[in-house]
Length: 494
Image (cartoon, rainbow, N blue to C red):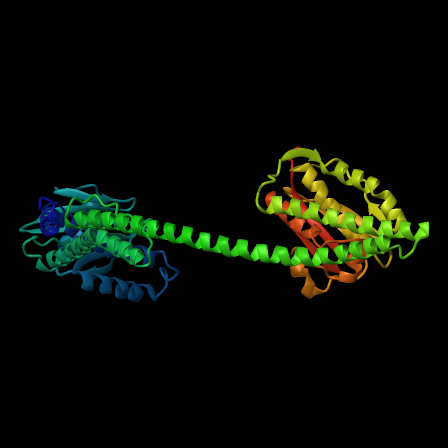
């Protein structure tokens, strides 16, 4: 192939090695001599620093100075192969480390009196010194001379050997260059190898996800080699498997839904028939008994007949109310009665209902407490919201005890308004709370029957709130029970 991995790897490796060799040759050709001179210059500067620091120390004018000075400078000169000559302001020798003391004395004197010998090149010049490259006879030196502020003058030499003869320095330089080239080459090879192995690792990750039926990942390489071809085929395989599994899952999901729906419908039908039969049995029996009593004329006096008729009408009204609620619940659960979302003032809705229920609360000697809330606008179905509040409020009235208080609250949150109806009295048993929203469930059946409850009201609340996708719930307190529901608050409401 045109972009074969083996060819790419070979070309890259050859290119790197050639680059390293060329770089080494260029460095040796253009920088080795400068490096050699620079190292010799550094040796002279170290010796100069030793002289300057010792002369500027506290022992300069003491008896210990000659010995201290000679010791430090001798160490530097012997290690670095430097010849040196130092004299004081009275032209007396202070130190000499050379076999040709007379020559250095004459050259230093000449420099101090302004006579300079021909120099091949001035290497560096400072405030108190000058370093130059000079030739003396057949030998070449780096020569440094100068005069310190204390009057001390000096001259030092470091012999500059031929580049060819300086095998040690050249070898050291080659080691530095070789290590640098190897390091750079290693980094390049590492990045190149990673570039080549990345597609392989990507394909490995994709295949691992395919094992767990995750077909989202796709190979995105554009290297145009064997790995790229393999990646494209894996993409095709992944898409084919995903399509096949998706079709199977869709068919299986539809089948499961059909089975679940059928089972749910059968269960709901059985539950509905059982609950309706149970709820209608008592009022039908009462209606039948009192109707038979009227027909047989058990009591002929007008007062008894009136009582019998009231019982029959009351039981019939309860049956009618239950049937209406069941029809409403049925429409909500099957989605036939969609929520109509509109903007309205929930504060007004609550206050109007409390006012209309005033007769009921007075008859039961219940005190209703509600703060003077400002207008709070919400998005919801106004009619269904009133029905939810009506169910909560009527439940509170029927179960109110203790201090006989009902407290209505409107709590504004970030994006919600929580409407709460609290009534004093006995808390709901904890084991009964999860079942409150079930159809026909009654915590206290005798009391529910007493006020004509059907056990459907909270089921209607659940269906309404779920149709509007809003939260609802109940909380027990030591002195009563709080039922609440939430509505979406309008942004412009305060």
